Figure 1: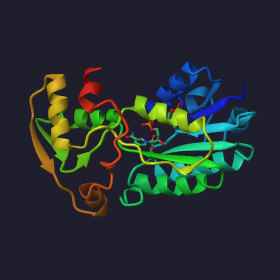
Figure 2 (figure 1 turned 60 degrees about the vertical axis):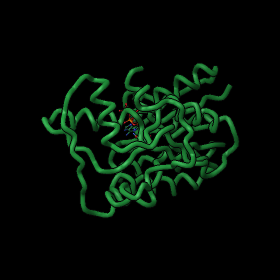
Figure 3 (figure 1 turned 180 degrees about the horizontal axis):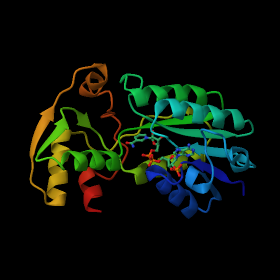
Figure 4 (figure 1 turned 30 degrees about the vertical axis):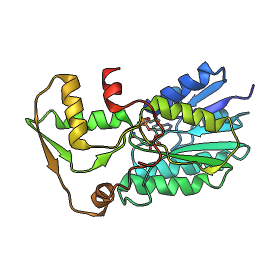
Length: 235
Ligand SMILES: NC(=O)c1ccc[n+]([C@@H]2O[C@H](COP(=O)([O-])OP(=O)(O)OC[C@H]3O[C@@H](n4cnc5c(N)ncnc54)[C@H](OP(=O)(O)O)[C@@H]3O)[C@@H](O)[C@H]2O)c1
């Protein structure tokens, strides 16, 4: 059996993907700094790619520029890879936000190899982290925008499915089961954690916020995930 390489297999999504592939009986190899590799410097990359014909590229450094370097290094080294699967973010071409610009540049690099790109909406984990941060304040500020949070377990199932098939370019965008305002999500978070806060909507100037306000981060016509934010909070 040829190994599948998962970059960022120690991350929030990566752990779910590794679990999914391992349960399906795949031989999974992980590249991340915690496993001794580094996509930005190229450390351990050739060894990680040896005999791997499928790569799921999930690593992120959370800095757009570094993500571009990491993806460039991976693509340059992945000359024998049959299928490169890349997870990206819904709306990055309509929301000029720093991290997203790096993601868009990384998508372009990925297209140099036989590839599948899956853009997903915001993960439940990210929304919960943002709300937990806001809830440390006596009055809880939330962006006056909507989100369609998705569970990484749902994204992992879809990525495993795509990885087992042929390269298909851009796959249909993948969103969570519900579109909600941040105010609604904050209400669910407060209910689940037993906290009481006054929630205030926050509007920001700029085109990036405008993109979110216009719903460029949503795929309402294509809800694919099954686990709601409320279910995630109680699971
Ligand atoms: N969060 C969201 O809402 C969301 C939505 C849609 C798409 N995405 C995309 O999904 C992917 C995974 O996101 P996540 O939230 O699971 O990220 P995460 O939890 O921050 O995990 C990032 C992973 O990348 C690895 N990594 C960081 N720097 C590295 C380097 N220099 N070389 C190799 N590996 C490195 C980390 O492991 P080490 O620390 O061990 O290196 C970790 O395994 C990202 O591409 C992200 O853009 C995220």
